Length: 232
Image (cartoon, rainbow, N blue to C red):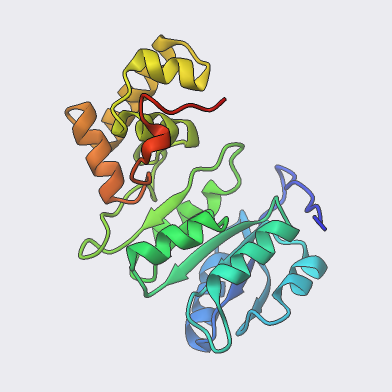
C-alpha cells in the first residue's frame, strides 16, 4: 500500500533521515546537515531494519542511505521505500563506485548515488535538488570510477526527457523518428539535443550518446528502441 508523504511547505526545512552504521560518519553527516538553515535531520539510525516504519513516524522528504551495512540489501530497501512512499527521495551515499550497482539502485527508484568522497557542497546540492519540482537523478562518483556527472549544478544533469531522447539517438533514430515516437515536435527534439550537447560537452549526436552510455545516464539501446521498434 502506498503511504503519502506531505509535500514540503516552502518555508520549512527539508526533512532528512541519515542511515549509516558508522557512528562517527553518521554524526558528522547530521551535524553538516543541521548547520544549514533549510535542512534538518528528523532521525538517524545505524540499520535499515525497521526503516520503513521510521519513515512512517517521522515523515522525511529524503532518506540518505548507506549501501553496505550488516543484514542489509540496498536494492531491496530502496524498492521497499519507494514503493511504499512514492514521494520519498532516496539518496545513496557510499564508498562503492561499481557501475552495475549504480544502475541497479537507480532502477529500483533511488534518486541519487553519491560517493562519500564528494565535496560537502555536492552533497548539499544533491539534497536540495530533491526539493525542486522536477528533480534530476544525481550521480557523483570519483574520477577514477564512472565519470562524475550531474551533481553540483543543474546544467550538468540530464532530465528524464533528455535521457529518453538520447536513448533513441543511441539507437540511430532520426530527429523526425524520435519526435513521432515521443509524440513531440521535431523542434522540441532539437532543443533537447542542444541542451544535452551543452551539458555533456558533446560535439555530435554519437559523442553525446557514447558519453551518456559510459556514464550510465542511459542504458545501451535494445532492438525495441531502433527504427523498426515501436511503442504501440
